[in-house]
Amino acid sequence: MARTTALSRERIVTAAVEMLDAAGPDALTFRALNARLQTGFGAIYHHVANKDELLIAATDRVLTDAVPADAPGASPEDRIRATALSVFDAIDRHAWVAAQLARAATQPAVLRFFERIGQHVQAMGVPGPAQFGAASALLFHILGAAAQNAALARSVDASGDRRDFLTALATSFDPDGYPFLHAVSAELSEHDDRAQFLTGIDLILAGIVADRAM
Image 1: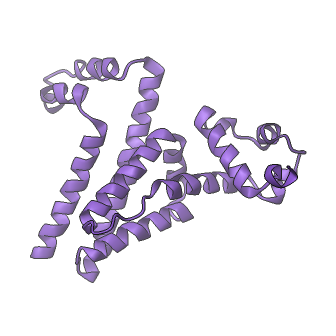
Image 2: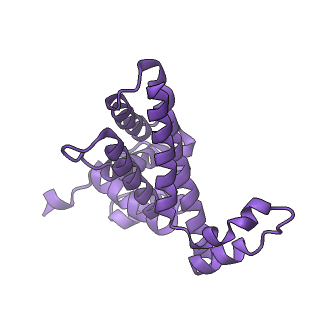
């Protein structure tokens, strides 16, 4: 029994992810984590030095678990779409990840994800000098759009039904001050977040292909 319940870094990170999902970063303290894991005060420090390290490890767990294995025979473009959607869905489920990603652009989870996207860009045949820009555009869209979606989800959670929230927002735009938003108000209230996200991916991929053909 002791072998299965022994404190480990993996157990600590798993518990941290569960606490972050339930109540956000402010609720994640080592005192609360000790209580959840039913371990002595200070035992966690043997595995994790501080809260920042724990947040980085929790973010790494979520994103690592989210990135799917490459489908055999899939094109680089389809692999990018699959990876992007998996990360989008993961951040939707774990809204706290968005803020954590913004804190440090060079944390391991981001670098590994960038590497994955970059390899797919290389497989598309993008010339060397253009690879960094193309992969960066995809990275920024994926993480940025996912973060925006998570922020919207928090707003909806605070106010009630998603459709009611978006409908109220859409109908609030004055046509003189916001002619574009007023014109697309129906789409705003009825749109599918994942489809909208993939539209951005497809636009970037189309631009990469067009630039490669020049």
